[in-house]
Length: 159
Image 1 (spheres, rainbow, N blue to C red):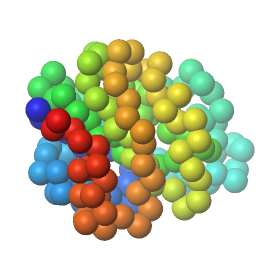
Image 2: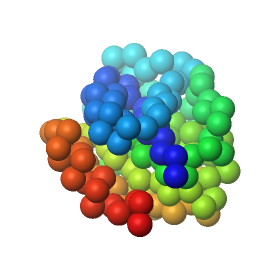
Image 3: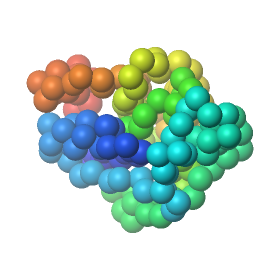
């Protein structure tokens, strides 16, 4: 079984958690890089005209990604990391999922947020990866390597 940690991080918070998780698991890591990077102004969630506000209010929005996992068929399990925006995943995560045939693969979301919960994120992700097996997601606000290890072990992925 091969595992990948794939993540999107607009400010670096999720990147830090993803790198720590990949180290704990001992697996490959892939950064989901937007074709057009997000600026500080784009991330102003209180501004209804900011890029992220507009994207999150458009269910059809699929921001372009600059990179691809060339060997996605090699992975059985994907830990998918992202910040929570407006109680769900950023639309670029749907773009990522829709680029591949993920049927039969296990996807385990993890997210960062200062205060939001996962909300209905899993419900929003599933249509973008038909046939994939989604496990319950985890918020990783203040996760240490030992807490991440305990979480991964609790998933019983090797059984």
